[in-house]
Image (cartoon, rainbow, N blue to C red; front, side, top):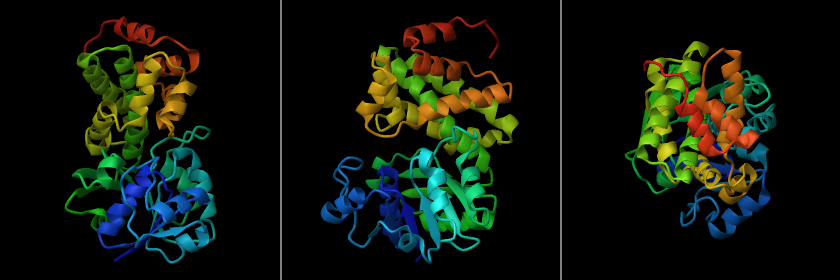
Length: 329
């Protein structure tokens, strides 16, 4: 049995906490929002994030981060990407050298354009920072539906250790050394999912969805490989697999936001209706900046940014993509 602290109380934090508890581990959930912890204490459920899912009594609930992270084998960070650096800062001086940290958030820091593992390592240089990613909606993990993911670490012994902790009959875990590839794939698939949702919102069909997925993974690869990612990672679970599920599922907040925008709502109206963090909106700007930095062509990313931040109608964005110069595949 491992002692594990999960930082965050959103849907993914709760889903992974239930999984780890069911695997026989001693789990603590921490949130910086006291109301979230009080809700869980009183009702053993978070109806906003995971309605109908009961949080087991044996999971500890904590608002004091010092108590939450003391003497833990593993710390799981499951906050939204924009809170990652601040969460890591709160661990300074509170964890030992060599502390294993698993990041679940998917995104790119907007100011530095750093992946989130790099952000954590900057604040906690002596920690062992790993990443868990793949096609894994929290709603399905919490309901114990079969799910496959990848854990990436620069230290394969740590990755194998975590593989044993997270793996179960319904949660299959692979290992990888390609931390960068997994993070870029996990971040940019949210941008493509916004595009897929926009296409759904205006009433386009399956042909467009399939094209966005396949051309989307090409765009992601076009950026990630020159940055140092491995091609096989991008065509694996945390690349193509995560992209497919995020573009196709109504569990995907990015796809849902895209649908609303395609139906004519503004970006702010879509975010308010989804009522959860839409990571792809932040990642869209970062992806465009990275493409410019690395001199990479990413036409879908460009058009998503124009829709989000320049109020370009979705139909015009699709026309722009369709009328690009004809080239070989």
